[in-house]
Image 1 (cartoon, protein in one colour):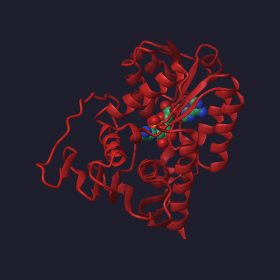
Image 2 (spheres, rainbow, N blue to C red):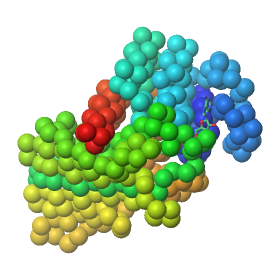
Image 3 (cartoon, helix red, strand yellow):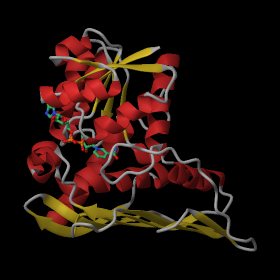
Length: 323
Ligand SMILES: NC(=O)c1ccc[n+]([C@@H]2O[C@H](COP(=O)([O-])OP(=O)(O)OC[C@H]3O[C@@H](n4cnc5c(N)ncnc54)[C@H](O)[C@@H]3O)[C@@H](O)[C@H]2O)c1
């Protein structure tokens, strides 16, 4: 049984706490949040302990789940690693590649595991798209269009997401999901083009094109839509022999010579609020982390190296957008 301590009980902390209650091989021992009142209320709700400090939490767990604002990921990961605790840390890994490298190095030096929570690699529809590309059942992938946008995430504690020096802007906080998935699906692009809307929060709406030898990938990500704009997460992948489309409806596979097929994915209700209504991807992600840590097997969906690559590429897109 993996004893887990959660740090940060905001939007993502709530989501992760709900997921642990569905995983038999892990137990959520307690939580630490700088806002003690919030931490206490959260602990009561989940029937766990509220720790008064991170150090006290570290003393009672095997693994730490970091759901803190991005600018704190490095500090807490390095502290946890030095205390010989495994780390699951929310994406993006850090604000800079140097910080991300330091997180990876600290975990390696202390012989503890580190996984960055790039949930889209575990999201059922995206995971199936990856399998379709891998098997080649529809032929080679020719192009993919990925979209992710919504209103500004107003739920962040102390409005930290509005501060570019803490969150990195919409491109780093939200669009990185699709950059990371493009890397998973197609590898490193040969050429990168990016333009976007830059405002006081950073790059708030980005359009990128990744060029590959045989494919092209177009991405749009933004968090500057008007209030009440529904959150949108969509893709359209065109293969030699068909297309896989998730855009406002269930993911549908269109294969030449066959009727369209809608795969069924069991839904797991999420109670975390924000813009997420399905726990599915987070469940698969955390289950993978727990299974791999308890069995000692390596992570093979997302690794610190792939998370550094997605950070590096997203920072490049941001640089191009600001040029
Ligand atoms: N994977 C996803 O789909 C997804 C979605 C949203 C956010 N995130 C990521 O999750 C992380 C957390 O985002 P969030 O939306 O949950 O933020 P949030 O503001 O809702 O929650 C952060 C929590 O951390 C606490 N906190 C702040 N400083 C602290 C400190 N020094 N010590 C202890 N606690 C402290 C706050 O009180 C708050 O409860 C970010 O890196 C974000 O990018 C991922």
